[in-house]
Amino acid sequence: MQIAPTIAELRESLGEARHAGKSIGLVPTMGALHEGHLSLVRLAKKQCDLVVVSVFVNPTQFGPTEDLSKYPRTFERDQEMLTSENVEIIFAPSTEEMYPPGASTYVEVEGLSERLDGKSRPGHFRGVATIVSKLFNIVQPDKAFFGQKDAAQVAVIRKMVRDLDLSIAVMVGEILRETDGLAMSSRNVYLSPDERKQALVLSQALQQAKDEYSRGERTAQTLRNTMRAVFTVQPSAEVDYIEVVDWQTLLPVEKAAPGTLLAVAAKIGSTRLIDNIVLPAAQ
Ligand code: PAF
Image 1 (cartoon, rainbow, N blue to C red):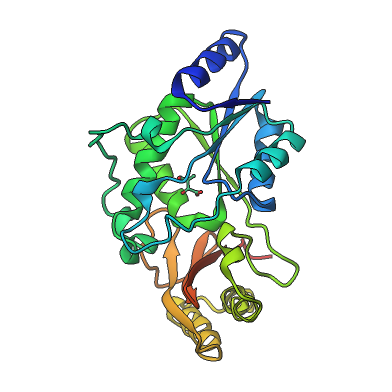
Image 2: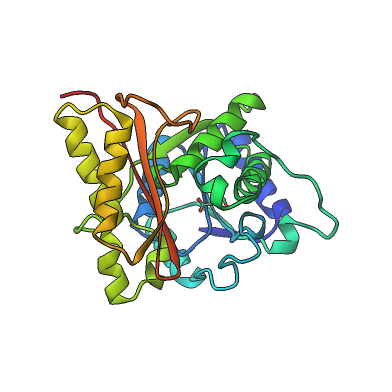
């Protein structure tokens, strides 16, 4: 496995691979890897000849009061995990490599970037769209792999790819959960044992709304009320949003249907967690 710390080194290796006719898969990450990331890597390995995993904690997607400096950094462990998955290349640039002094160009997906997480984290999706376009330009992958857990991010990236006519297939891997339902996240390490239990409220709220949908309920407001009621039982969770939206536009729907996104975000202690469910086709 090669570790490329610079764009030049990465481009050289990828040039050779491309010349040899290999298809390239990109799994963008901010490190602190867990099984959720590894499931994306496995998907990429199945579908592409060569897989690049980028490990870069992107400062432009963190707000001024957010957890950039304390974001978990576990590079040695990440490297071991990716070696076991037979990943060909890790791209691990420095901040200066990605944002040289004076860099002042950003990519903004208007509209979508102000919805869901974008509403409470102004500038977050501008940072995501900017770094993901830079990674797309540097790696020029055939396919890029993202987790459904960041459903709003997926919507923003899909729109960016469409709007800018990028010739990259955006692939989405399912959410991986702990046995009790908690969605896997690099931020789960911040939770105290007590908060870890409280955090179950997110997946429980989603599950109850999904069950109600399976029993025939279609009114979005009713599904939202159901989720809100579950959160009421866990008052220590500070709700950011409880939404029933179209996954493409991230706008609220009145009637839920297959493909509708149920999405929640809440702070448990000082840790902001998100989770979602995409409603399935009727059985
Ligand atoms: O989902 C993430 O980990 C990040 O938002 C991403 C896509 C790697 C961009 O920094």
